[in-house]
Length: 127
Image (cartoon, rainbow, N blue to C red; front, top):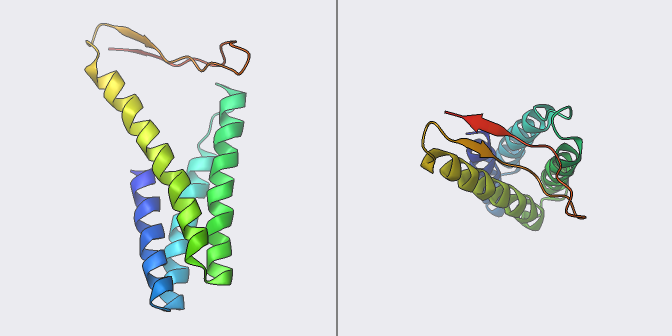
């Protein structure tokens, strides 16, 4: 739901920028920024520090692009933030679909593979 909200407000902000309604653009883009900060603050670095650092970097990139869009009134900055948020939302949806397809009694190991093939943190979900 947070991804959906951030995407919705960013798109509304982009539309407002296109129509040169800068007050509305600022308000909508600011709401998207707040949602992104909420997602970033919700990362649990104790579970998987490397993954959380990567996610934090992506969130901060999108956040900065939305700030830039407010300052420069450029839709291209919003577009870059939208690309990141849309990709992360799609990843989340695929993960949830995978979990929902499993039998309630199965255990799912959603390990994160590091660049050297080592396993990072893992999330186990039991029915």
